[in-house]
Image 1 (cartoon, rainbow, N blue to C red):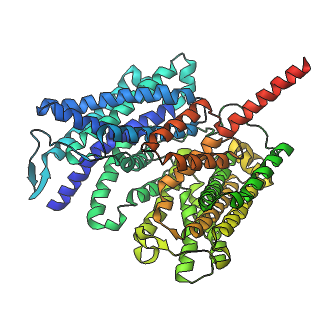
Image 2 (image 1 turned 180 degrees about the horizontal axis):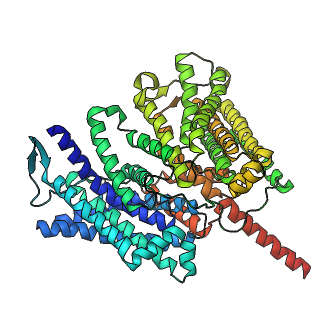
Image 3 (image 1 turned 45 degrees about the horizontal axis):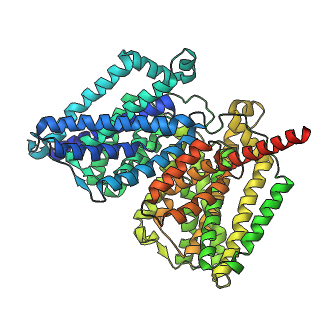
Length: 620
C-alpha cells in the first residue's frame, strides 16, 4: 500500500510541470488557433534560464525568485516570437503557422547550443526541501509534496484570471468567436500578444519548476511537446480544467505504467488519447470545433485546371534533365536525387489528402514506414523476391490506412490530426519494441533490390519512373471525379451531403489512397538504402512532410513536390554547417513571412503580375 501511495504522489508531482506547459499551450491555441510546436522550446528555455539564475541567486528567495523570473523572461521571448514571426502570417492558413513554429524550434535549438553548450545542466536542490518524508514506510521527496500543494493554487489563479477578470472575459470570448471580438472593437493583435506572453510564461515556469527533479538538456523540448499536445487534446483544446485533469491522468498512468507494464510506456498516453477521442471526439472538457477552413483561408481558391502547354513543356524539360543526370553526374548526385524523388512522392501523397481534402495528418509516416517495413519483412522472413515485396508495400500501407482511417475520419480539425498521430505512434512503438521480428532500434538490413536493379544508375531510373509516375497518378486523381468530390467535402461537408455525397466514405477513400502512395514511397526507400529503422516512423518524419507541403504551397497541386525538393536540397547543403538548424530555421521563417502562399503560389503570383504589366504596356 505504501508503494502504491508513493507512486501516486510521484505522478501527481510530475503533473505540475506538465500542467503548466499544457495550460499555456491550451490558452494560445484557444485564442489564436496556432498549433504552436515551439511551445516545448519555451519550456526548455525556462529550464536553462532557471539553472543560470539559480546559480547566481542564493537561498530560498533566489530559488523561487529564479523560477518566477524565468517565466517572465520566457514570456518576453514569446512576445518577440509572436510579433516578429507569427503576427505577419495571421492571415495565412491556420495550420500554415505550424511551419513558422517549426522554424522557431530549429532557431532556439541552435541558439541554446551556442549559449549554454551541449552538456546537460543539473538543476539545484530546492532550499529547505532537500529531504524526504516517510509515508506508510515509503520515502517521498519533500519537493514532490511541495509541487502537489502548489499546483491547485496555480489552477485556481488561472481560473480566477480567466473567469473573473476583464482580460479573462476577452480571452474566453476570443476562444468562442475571435472574429466577433474584433468586430466589437477589441484590438486582436494585442490580445493575441498578451495571451502568447501568458502561455509562454507558463511554459517557462514549467521548465524552471521541474529543475530539482530533472535538469536542462537540449532534447527536453522534443521530449515534452508530444505529451503536452496529448494532454491538451485529452482535456479539450482551450480548456484549463481539462488540461489539469489530463495532466494528472497522464502523469499518474505513466508512473504506474513504468512499474507494472514497462512495455507500454512509449505509447500509453497515445492509447489513452485515442480511447478518449473515440468516446468524446472533442476531449473531456472540449467543445465541438467551429467549422473552419484549415488551410483554405484567404482569397478564394482557383478552379483546378490541367497543366498548361507551357507547364507541360517545363515538366518535360525537367524530366529530360533528370534522365541525363547519370551521364553528367556522379553516384552522389544520383543518390541525392533518388532521395529527393522518394521524399517528393511521400509529400505528394500527404498533399493529396491535405490540400484537396482538407485532412491534416500528423501521423503520415506510419504509412511510409509501414510500406517499407512490409517489404523488408517479406524479404527477411519469407524470402520474397524484391519485385513481389515492392508490389506488396503500397498494398500493406493502404490496408493500414483503411483500418486507421475508419476511426480517424469520424473526427475533424486538430482532433483528427492528433488521432492520426496516436495511431502512428502505436505502429512506431510496435516496431521499436518487437525486437525478435523487427530488429527493434537495430532495424532490418540487407534489403537490397533485385540483381537487375542493383546498380546505382539502374535503381535511379527505376525510382525516377515509379516516383514520377506516382506523382502524376495523384495529380490525375485530383482532376478525376474523386478529386472534385473530395474537394467538395472539404469546402462544405453539409452542402456535399445535401447533394448526395457520402462525405465520410469519400474521405476514407482519400485517406487510404494517400496511405498506399506513401507506402509506395516507403518501398522505394527501403530498397534504395538496403535497410529500414524505426526512425522512419517517428513524429519528425510526419512533420517533415507536413512542413514541405505548406512551404511549397498548400493551395497548389505541386506544392508538396516543390517544397520537398527545396527542403531536401537545402538540408543537404546546410547540414555541412555547424549551426545548420539556425540557418534552416531562419530560411523557413523567412519563406513563411515573405511568401505566405508558399513557394509555388508566390512564384505564380509574381509571374502573373509580370504578365499583367507586359499586357498593360502592350495595350499602351
